[in-house]
Length: 208
Image (cartoon, rainbow, N blue to C red; front, side, top):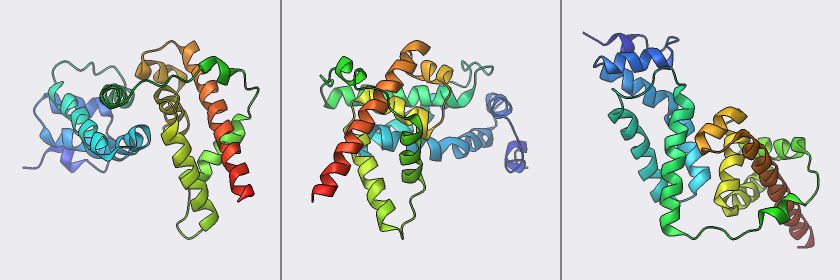
């Protein structure tokens, strides 16, 4: 007999319901959770880490931790931020093993002046919706990927969580284990950093 979770996989089932079924021994419920979040979590890790070997390891470890936490997970907590918290922490641990912490001065970036949030959103949206048959947009996508991959870990992470994953300040604070005030200031710093690099890249392109 098929699992109830399997039968209803195309219907609206909450994460809490799936977790409860998984706690009761329904393996199909766990498979449904993985299916529900695997694409967004994998995309987040690819942007955050930019190293395929680490992406694969952290992706698997994240769901293994969920699998092992059947009896201890608090069903009252939203699942998606919790999964991203695990992934972000594991990714940061992996990165610390292979690279030094950036020595970039945060204060210098914060003094760069006001930056239009809409401008950043437009650039990142263009990156996300890049059609393969439009060369100019593909070039934009490549520049965005390059800039993001070279950002310091803490700035890269918060930019991805805010603009690609669209987490709230509250959830970003939980995922990164920092106060909401720090989330806001760090996000501003990340936006300033991104825009400075973006404008510099554009100037370089024009001078070619």
